[in-house]
Length: 103
Image (cartoon, rainbow, N blue to C red; front, side, top):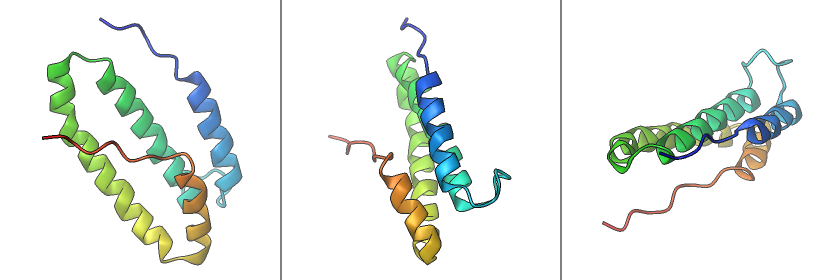
């Protein structure tokens, strides 16, 4: 079994990013807040999956793909709005797609 992972540095960085991107006074309604929360969920999902036995990782792969689809859909919506496009540029600095599968 793997050791617990300390996410507090990542959470602090996501909090700092949210402060920079927020346009809704932290009500969670702007694309900056929603994007950061999506990243927060992704980080938690990756850590959770990576610390599970291999069979659990395989089972969680579908969830990861669904989250990626949601992120891509949100990016498409954001790119249609000039103000949101600037916010997505900031978010993309902290976001990387998973490597392609070698099947």
